[in-house]
Amino acid sequence: MMKTHRILGRCIQGRLAMGRGLLSLVLAGGVLAGAAASGPALGGVIDPQIFVQQSGSSPAGGDPNLIVDPGVFVVGVAGNFVLQNPLLLIVGAYNGMGTPSITYGGGVSAAAIGTYGLTKDSAVYTGTSSGTAYSQLGLSAGGSESFGNWSNADVADGFAKPSSFTLYAFALDTNLTSGNPITVGESGAANGSFIIGYDCSAGTGSTSGCATRGDIGQTPFTNAGLDAVTVPDPGTPLLVGIGALGMGAAVRRRRTNGIANSVA
Image 1 (cartoon, one colour):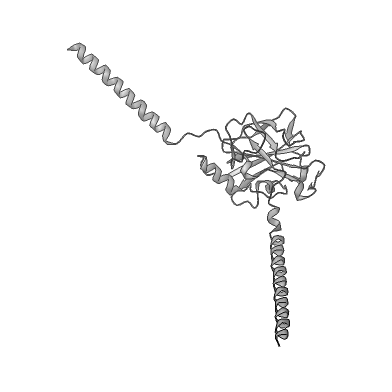
Image 2: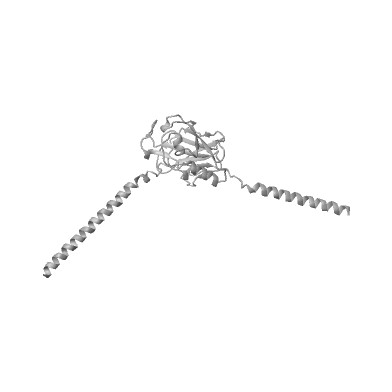
């Protein structure tokens, strides 16, 4: 009888172990399924990542990067990449104010239609536009260059809330390479304008775009350039004016007192 109990006990333990094993497989399968379901989120990682900032050879991550001297700033690519020639540089002019121009020692021109799938070299971007700044020009990209992000950044930096940005696409004659950012200048666009880059990994770009999404080089909002020459606080001119009036009044009082003393 005891022997029968021992045999039954071993059978039960074996079945429990098998049950735990099956449960582990089910849970593991669920984890794998969850990872597969979240796969598209990995596609949100921007790599190659093009950064636009005042200076430096690696991404500043300023969210966005403030450019207080637009006449001389840098554009680079993070990681270990060589991008195709040309590099596209896009300027989003704040409220359509001013016509931007780009200077670059290697040569620059208006971007040609068809470059990496470009369908237009200029467009108006508003809060009702669908997609990112890139998609307004026909460029395939994910990322976070949305009208909302641009608008909020402008307001946070002291500018009035914009109603639109006019986008201009330029082509720079260069193979952008990691560790070797290029020096660029911009003029003409109003303060509050944004500057972002777009390209494909070397040898993967065509008139229809980059070969795969992994070949797309673009600028995330965290490393976009914001033309943001310091905007004075609205109260500053008033305070300066009040101070000047006060000084003027004090000088007049001293002069009046001096004349009165002389007469006396």
